Image 1 (tube, helix red, strand yellow):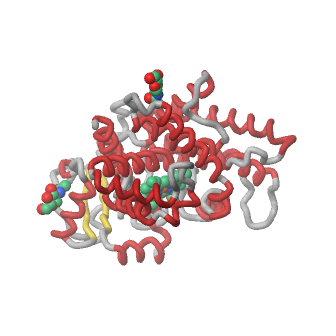
Image 2 (image 1 turned 30 degrees about the vertical axis):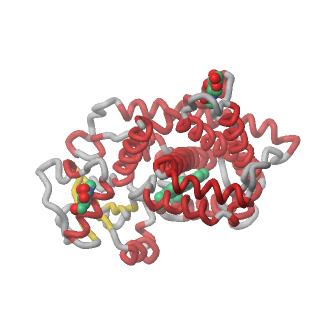
Image 3 (image 1 turned 90 degrees about the vertical axis):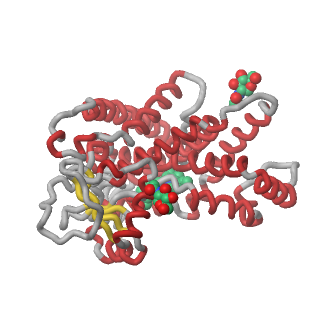
Length: 383
Ligand code: HEM
Ligand SMILES: *[C@@H]1O[C@H](CO)[C@@H](O)[C@H](O)[C@H]1NC(C)=O
Ligand SMILES: *[C@@H]1O[C@H](CO)[C@@H](O)[C@H](O)[C@H]1NC(C)=O
């Protein structure tokens, strides 16, 4: 259970990070602000950021209405807790499609030249389109399915070999999700024996920690110029190492690619192919400076979100044995005991699907989504 605690704490930290806006330079007082709770001088509403911040926000929105204002330190936040208002801001006013700047988004994520934090514009569109077509399309999902299924098979085999001993399931699920995503991205496993894998694992773990670290200087103006925890220095140093590491991965791929084309079929190979076939119409020429941050985004966004969600699903099933029994019955009836469940079985497993949906509903790993920011108003917004 300690791990679950850590997971909750982590998602809280991430949530706070996500909520943070870099509206430091906003000229407060120029525009009327939505209603919100009164805050303290300097700290603003920082002390109200409890461990369940998303629930606090929901409670506050019942008092102050669906659009409310909070000030965390020196930073203004507009919390939008209504689908209609969020849609208006995001889809009609596309300027809100940018994201705020923080120490982590700037120093870890390539000075915001990555996909997630790059300002709205041609680059924003180009990078999202690339992902939509080459990573998240049905075709890409189907193409990469053998990789995901292989990693799940490895996990199940490992667990069944150890059926009589205690197993740290959190660790195994995390390793499985990280390996699956890493193979999809760069054709390599993170958790594996050997020095090379050890270095990779170290990098990914440090990336996760730094990407979700909180720099108090992002919140409190007077502290901005002092790197109080030495965090910014750490981020800069790590960024250099991670960048070199990705550079080497790309070189390795290029070396392997010259003869076989995109034989690996992973995302990096596809991106390298695209970069080689420049000038084919609408795609802006792709360089390593686009590929590296994109890979980094996927590592940060894809691994712990997936493994935490699976872990929550399993915890809920263990806590509610009658649901676990129903899921097992369904699985026995549809799949039987002679083979492993595959992704192709999913449409025949409505109860399992319901378990997954309930897990997303009860345990959203990013309850506050990612913050949006408009350069026009200089105010940040979270949904
Ligand atoms: C259980 C699994 C996952 C959950 C619950 C989840 C949830 C989320 C949420 C809530 C957002 C914020 C959307 C927004 O505010 O605009 C997001 C963004 C994102 N996710 Fe996931 N995610 C999961 C898995 C993944 C995976 C496996 C990948 C990639 C391999 C991924 C890549 C991304 C990216 C790149 C973004 C940023 C999109 C953008 O800036 O436009 N996520 N995710
Ligand atoms: C929100 O309000 C509910 C009902 O009053 C309360 O039980 C819950 O503890 C509150 N949550 C937070 C995080 O303040
Ligand atoms: C499986 O069991 C062996 C011996 O009991 C142990 O060394 C190993 O760490 C276990 N594996 C897992 C995944 O826990």
